[in-house]
Image (cartoon, rainbow, N blue to C red; front, side, top):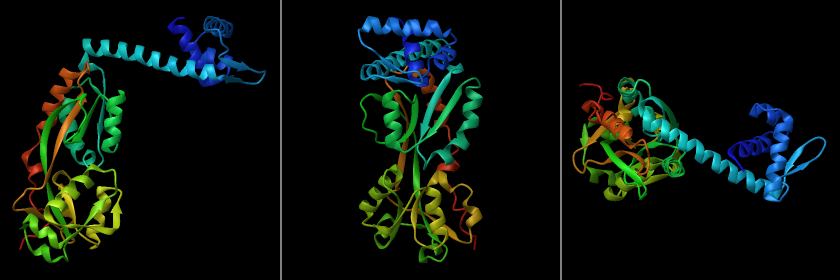
Length: 308
């Protein structure tokens, strides 16, 4: 049994046709057929049920194909690791980021990343935190930007920055006349939050718990932008991460942001990768680039407030 035979096996499982599988492997059809028959003889079981019109996997064939895919994936991983070790800054890195951070952080940092690593190809994935952690664990991502804490022993973390929260209220709200408030004043507020599965929801609930505030039960948003639009429509208040505030001066007649005078509600952001990753040194440098944010982004002026 060799890798070429496993490649033929997987190709035939994918195409369910000897001719198309042979074309995909760039070999003659008799060659592929012979190698599949040789593999069946070696294993002592039929891997495919053959009819005049189609090819179907047997139960033994399904198991063999699943194992073959894992073996081939490991071999590709070995080759990729070798390429990365020799020229890590010229390869591919798969980066994950969660939805309430990616749209606001990536436009700020990607020009710096490209300048520092001009030949590095970054493949970006946006997904909720639990999905990103699972992809990291399974090797489907190389690195992910996540909110701390993350309880995974196999992951290395480089903390990047701490992002404050601000309270977003409609301009008609009684708090719109103020520049700041104390955390305990949230006890008199009912906050709109994101739906389950968003780490921002968990962070906001923690703030609510500390302040004695309540969550509005009639509405849960699917995105941070939806929350913003609901505040603009005058339907409630919410916590807004500092990076999402940029550009909100456009809404100055309808939305107001308040800083917290005490407690400083915030979330900590880190860069995570597997401790066994061959990309460790490169990702350490990437963390330095991501950490270098302009201070104004994390301490925004209340641009959404008209001057009086």
